[in-house]
View 1 (cartoon, rainbow, N blue to C red):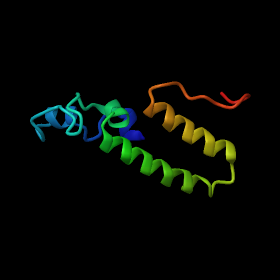
View 2 (cartoon, helix red, strand yellow; view 1 turned 60 degrees about the horizontal axis):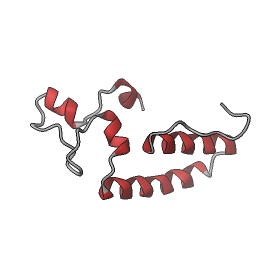
View 3 (cartoon, rainbow, N blue to C red; view 1 turned 180 degrees about the vertical axis):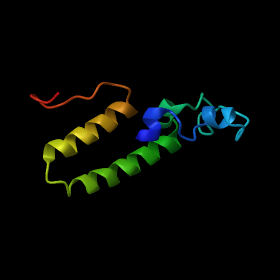
View 4 (cartoon, rainbow, N blue to C red; view 1 turned 135 degrees about the horizontal axis):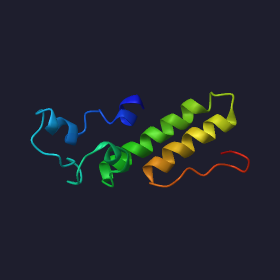
Amino acid sequence: MAKYNARIESVRINMVRRKHATSTACPHCMSLEDTDHIVTCPSIAASTLYNTQMIKLEYFLKQTPSRELQQSILEIVGGLRHQRDAIYDEGWT
């Protein structure tokens, strides 16, 4: 998350700036590949990978004793993917 928040990860827009790539296009959907696009890419390949990783994350988080923490993390990730604000249970902000 630190590289994501700092916008310095190896996405095409940064790779072109660093002269490590020649195109800023996402190899899956041909849209501009910036930091946000990595999470929101609509391609089938990206959606399949997201769904597979979410299953693994849910399994991992089930070992967490805090149900609220588990739900919050899943909701934040889902909010990023679907470009919406996270929705919390009543009483959580």
